[in-house]
Amino acid sequence: MKSYIYESPDGGNTVYRRELGSTNRKLHHVSDKQKDLFQELEHAKLWGRIHHAAKSDPALQQMINQIEVYYTLKNTP
Image 1 (cartoon, rainbow, N blue to C red):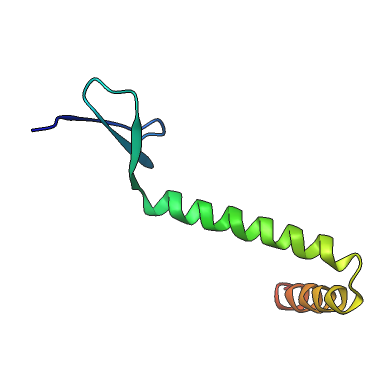
Image 2: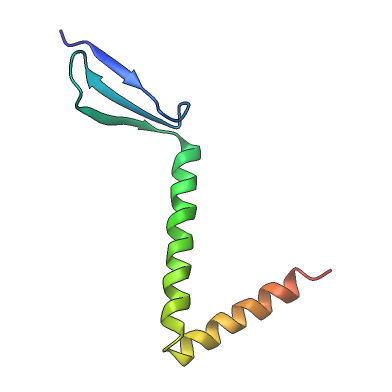
């Protein structure tokens, strides 16, 4: 029967498993908090690519402007 060591370098947000005596570890678990953080990061990267593409795409820039106006109006007291 194999024995495993479980390690978490970030306080439990990600947990890795490795066989006893081995240095080769595999991802065992990712917390919902960490998954949410990863999704937010990916979404931020997407918006960065969208803003970059809008520099050469007037229609896309116009859509971004409309989103910014909508957001500003909705969040102004």
